[in-house]
Length: 316
Image 1 (cartoon, rainbow, N blue to C red):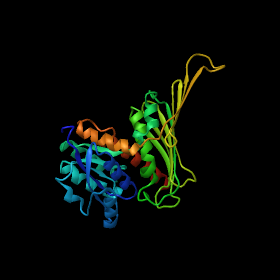
Image 2: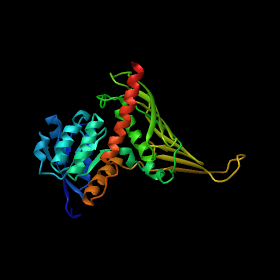
Image 3: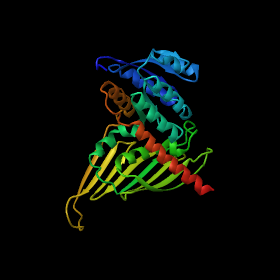
Image 4: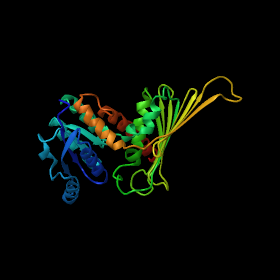
């Protein structure tokens, strides 16, 4: 595809998050022309369409042949059906996380994307977080990873457990750091407000010896998104929310005092959703792999399912 041609795009599902997606498409006028927005609520679709000066469409299937790429930000239960339709019609798809309800559905989408030669990106937005990007060069061979993702309760997103709602972000980041298969998972989760797990702690062991201890809660008093990585001679802390990065490196021998180099960075938060959308569009224009591929989304979902199964097993 010529780099001078603007991609024609649409956003499917313009609720709380989908509206932001549509705004990013509109903002990236150098790469795309947002044609339409779609929502199960016609009033919502019209409202967002009027805000952005685009068409409100009732049926996403009417967009076949009219757009080059879409972002699917509808409810999780509809991701598979909608994404499958667009992929089968040769339209590139950026689908919000979790990419589907089950890993079987996710695997089918990956296979279809390969068959129809279209890009399939999954919206694991932390991969575009400036704090994580700044720290990545320092991450070599993690031995232990500690993650806390805590949030106040919000009614949206509760159609799935906290593992699929929040923890899956961190599972994706961990899998991108640890180049080794998972060997075992231990987990405990419990419902507090909803009918599914609202808080969960999982211990994930990898074949190379790395261990990840991951906690996610959507019933906490205050929000927190912190990621800590321990490797030989290095400790690293990444605050996804505040944009802070600390790296402590042992620079020599001895322990009294320990020779340490301490680096602290405070980064601008940036606009990770805009960067995610830009990256997706550029992967199409330049025919390059997506930063977060369908396979990445599938692997994160498979690990999430293992954790959910472990929680359910404990309750039996």
